[in-house]
Amino acid sequence: MSALVLDGKALASALEPQLAARTAAIVNRIGRVPVLATLLVGDDPASATYVRMKGNACRRVGLEPRPILLPESTTTDGLLAAIDRLNADPSVQGILLQHPVPFGIDERVCFDRIAVEKDVDGVTALGFGRMALGEPAHGSATPAGIMRLLAHHQVPLAGRHAVVIGRSPILGKPMALMLLNAHATVTICHSRTRELPEIVRLAEIVVAAVGRPRLVKGEWIRPGAVVVDAGYHPGGVGDVDLEAAATRASAYTPVPGGVGPMTIATLIAQTVEAAERSAGLHPGGVS
Image (cartoon, rainbow, N blue to C red):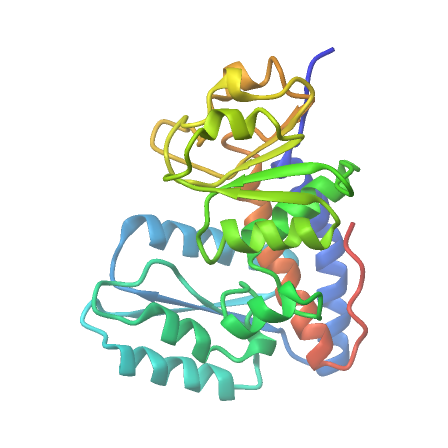
């Protein structure tokens, strides 16, 4: 039997009408359109493309995107001042600082300046801590999107052995904790892990988020495992040799069209949730 394709693009498209209806209810309640502000420092073309994609997704569900472009010469203090203005602006429900920022800016200090209630990308240390403890918080958008995709396809997590390859503060680490909170048994690996193929072969769920093209080979995949490829590299390849892995997996995310669309969909969903809380509405469910 062929492996199930965990189609993030299809799920993201299916979520948009629900999010649009919830946004309309917010507008009806407060009399204005909620805003997602995006801060882009410098002129990196890939980052500019991502900001445009997020702006288009906002418009499709009725949110207002507010792109704020700052020059490459911006300092940490200058970026902090811009974040402070957005924190104080009641029309702004979500703040996104596009990663990466130019060399010389203290990215962690700037992330942590974002008010936790407006941290819809899940990048603050406070939000991370709340998520880790199982408290209400906006999870980091990519791992939260992966969890949403797995839940939609009813992939069982409780009691299963998950291996996360990658330890970044906005992907690998929160991914591992989200899986742990869902009662999976989690092993975290990274680029310096010894005997990585042997560890991956034990996994019932593999999340590859290490940032190396096709690092994970097909023969590493345990028959019947679920493979989530969170990487994206030139040529449209991920961190997994998916052509080979798909012959052994029970389910997998395609590249492109798997994790990427769910990241943006989750960012938008969490912006809607933040706007609902601000408007005094109970956040609606998204399945």
